[in-house]
Amino acid sequence: MIGIVAVILAAGRGSRMKALTGDRPKCLTELAGRPLLHWQMDALRAGGAEALLLLRGYRGDMLQPEAQGMVPGAYEMAENPAWAETNMLSTLLCAAPWLETQFASGVGQAVISYSDIVYHADHVAALAACPQDIAITYDTLWEPLWRLRFGDPLLDAETFRQENGLLREIGGKPTSLGEICGQYMGLTKVSAKGWQTLAATCATLGADVAQTDMTAFLRRLLTDGQTVGAVPVAGKWCETDNEADLESYRGMLREPGWSHDWRWGGERGCE
Image (cartoon, rainbow, N blue to C red):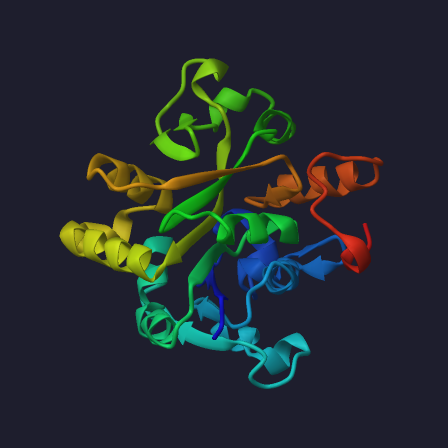
């Protein structure tokens, strides 16, 4: 029996990367000497994932395992043919046949990852260990990362509140840092029951599902009275929205002891 599988949502182009994604998906942007996608796959596998599905769209031909220097079948793939008109929630729904097959075979958990983030393998393991059927990780050391990226963290940060390991509020516009106890990182996990809840909630959105982002969807789950686990982590990850992010991270990786250096062991790549 396989305990954990993983899904990477890699259908989008990432237009804010400008020329860097002119001919390739955002997940192939390089940081610390490797494509983001390779960091994600290594972290997911080291964190316990035994099978992996890559959801592709823009320039999907570049995401074949062979195109990434991997053996054929190193991971499975599915398509979001409407990637240009939809978002990550719609892309996730394209994983339904694969996930339902995995859960029917006895898989216990599926970890779902954005494709524009990098993170330590320990975060994957901690998320998968959460007993809730739907759970997310959140960064308790979010503030220095947001200050690095935005100067004023309130320009981009969203409200986030948890209580006893359960998410209570997410995605609002804060007026003070006191309304924020962490930030969602783009890592989510579901059990078989959690996937059923997620799919059923998506069905109630109708056509709006195409324009509903993951944070808004998590907020909808809370509104509907669903339980969402909140797993705290301290740094060791980052998100890449644009070229400025990449340059900031490259600079910080030259500094010893950066709190958000996600690399581990032999996976340290180069700076």
